[in-house]
Amino acid sequence: MLTTVIPRGYTTCLNLYDTQRAIALLKRLFEDNLGGALHLRRVSAPLFVEASTGLNDDLNGVERAVSFDIPDAGRDAQVVHSLAKWKRMALWRYQFSVGEGLYTDMNAIRRDEELDNIHSVYVDQWDWEKVIAPRDRTVDYLKDTVGTIVNALADTQSTLRAVYPQLTPLPLIDREVSFVTTQELEDLWPELTAKERESAWVKDHPTTFLMGIGGALKSGKPHDGRAPDYDDWDLNGDLLVWNPILEQALELSSMGIRVSPESLDRQLTAAGCDNRRELPFHKLLLDGQLPLTIGGGIGQSRVSMFLLGKAHIGEVQASVWDERTLNACHEAGVILL
Image (cartoon, rainbow, N blue to C red):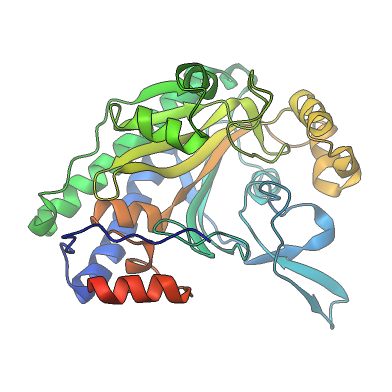
C-alpha cells in the first residue's frame, strides 16, 4: 500500500457542493467536446461480462476480477476492469463504418489497486473506440488523435474556468503535446524507475504522450504492463500531464491503435498467452472478422482531479479508503466524498 500525502498548505479551490456541481458540468462539457471532435456516438455499456468470453481487460495479468455467479442464467460473471475489448465487439455488432465510433461511461472495480493520492479501487472512465482504415494504422494518425483529445480537454477547461473563476490560479493545459517513447526515456535515465522517468520528462514537457507501452525495452523489461490483446504495443501510449499540486506526472488516458490479427498473434506469443486464442473474442479477431480500431480510456476522476485542482482522488469520487488515508486527509482538512 502506498502512502497518501497531502501537500503542506494545500487548500481546495471549490467547496464541497461546488465541487459536485463542477464535476457534473465538466463531464457534460467534455463528453460533448470529445464526441463531436472524434465523431463518436454514446452507447450503453456493461458493468460486468461473462467470464468465459475473454472480453474482460486482463490489465497486467495478475489483478483479480470481482467475480460472482448468476444462478438463473447458469453463468459466472466478472465486474469489468475496463471495456477495452468489449468496445471493439460493440463496433462490429453495431456495424459502424470507418470514421464512426462510440463512447460510454465505464465503471469498474479493481480490487487489487494500491491506494494513494491518484489510485482507487473504483475506476470511472470515458471509454471510446473508433473504426479506422488499414492506412490509419500509423504513428501519425495516433498523434493526430492525441492532439484532438488534448484540445477537447483544453476547451473543457476554458469553459469551466469561465463558470468558476476560483479555478483561474490553476495552470492551463498546454495544447502543445510532447511525443516521446518509453525507450527514449530509458536511454535518458536508465537508473530511474519507470514512474520517476515519467515525472522527470513531464516536469519540463507538461503535456506528454508517452509511446510504446507493453513490449520489452533494451533492458529486457517493459516500461509498464499492457495486456497483449487490445493495444498494438508499437502504436499505443499514455497521455500524461504535470500535476503541480502533487509535483508529479499524472496519467489522464491510456489509448492506442488496436491489435491487428498479425500483431495479436505476435503479442499473444510474446506475453505467454497463447491459451487465449480459442476464446470467442480472440478467434473473431484472429480470423479478421473484427474491424480495425483505435480507442482508449480517459479517467473521469483523474480529469476532474486535475481540472479542479484537487490533491486526492477521493475529493472527486466516492470509494473506500484505508485508515492511513482517512487520517491523513482528516488532519489536513481534506474532505473525501
